[in-house]
Image (tube, rainbow, N blue to C red):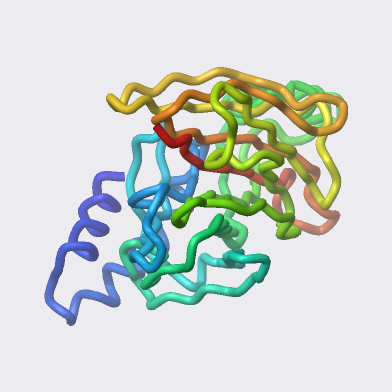
Length: 282
């Protein structure tokens, strides 16, 4: 991790051009191993911008809103899209861009940005780490299935992918989130930038295009002073959840779905990570 962080700092703040390709290769190779059991999210420089003002968004990997920024790497990007004023378009940056998303600006309205990674692989030397991970993410049935089906408890593999979204208010921020059809995704039913005072936030979690009932979701809240709190919530029978929000706070929703890998795959399990970030205006 220290080597990855140092390399990304070089990439971000300057180094001899001849080293650029080597740093990008190092970042690409180190990224998957740095991502295990950590949140991965989109973090705008500002969640509320003026119409026509530049919009920049980092890819972030870490825990509890604390982590490293990652560059835009096409080989690790399955989808990078945005929605604004009812339209949807793809985004493509330059290799190694910091921040990963950069735009000259948009008219007033709600800007929704999504990023989906390609699949990465994780090797487990023992079962204990996988057990802890599955239980932490609210899926003890995965552990029971692994044991009851006599699956290997050492030297097995998991593949994972990230499916993240952020909501940004341009001007008024008026508008609505939409379904992008990611493998898994949070959909904001209410718009946090147009909520009535003291009104709660409501979201829906999808997997394979369908609402996911009774799924564990971790909610992180960052206060204006930087203090981060968390709580474990659960979707209802309709795949939805409602929770109170506070002015001036930034929120991150994180949830993981597990599935047995397809027959013939070198991995035993696949995991799909969903994340959503947004802020509530003062």
